[in-house]
Length: 268
Ligand code: SF4
Image 1 (cartoon, rainbow, N blue to C red):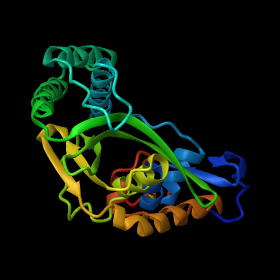
Image 2: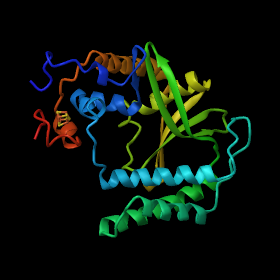
Image 3: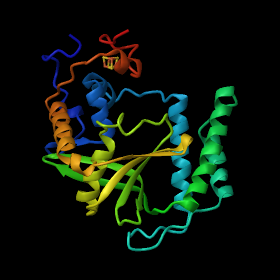
């Protein structure tokens, strides 16, 4: 058995805070995809080599983070006005320096990704001038208690909408998914609870902003799904605490798993 119950206790390696588990949206997704994968990544902390697409996503996120940080100091308070965006030149200059630091080469694939980044950031800049929402926070961190457990994370951007509602935005550089495909999405549902409990924002909605396609997919009713996501997160945290790491192989999960070559349970 890969995860025999009589194996030595892993208690001191678990990500714990006081009596509870430290948890993020990504931890929950990883554990739900396969508990053994979670164990490899978060308990054994076996390093994962990021793919080219993952490095690309990180670089684009960093560019936007630096771009907004470099703009006039944000209000830090939703009652103030918008943070003026910087120029397009500034944005593309940040891309060039991130690109160099990211160690990208000049293969065809890397050159194509660079072109996609330029096009996406140009559209991002255009949209920023025309958006009706007002960005009020970038890269805002949160943590909140879920029983004994502590959930933490960071929201890429929060906009205040003309309706008075707040939009919690997560940037994506992958292929767009529809609201229906995102019906069981964990991340934005967790952010809605965080916004209420950590920041005191009652009315929120979530959106994934697919940068390469300039497409924003809003997830309705994320706040209403609070009970569902609380249950999911609690179940995952209790599973981790109880050291339940049995593999749940499937063609889809294993195909996307960094540990498939070493994993004896991998579905091949
Ligand atoms: S290869 Fe499959 S079974 Fe093994 S850890 Fe990854 S997802 Fe789980």
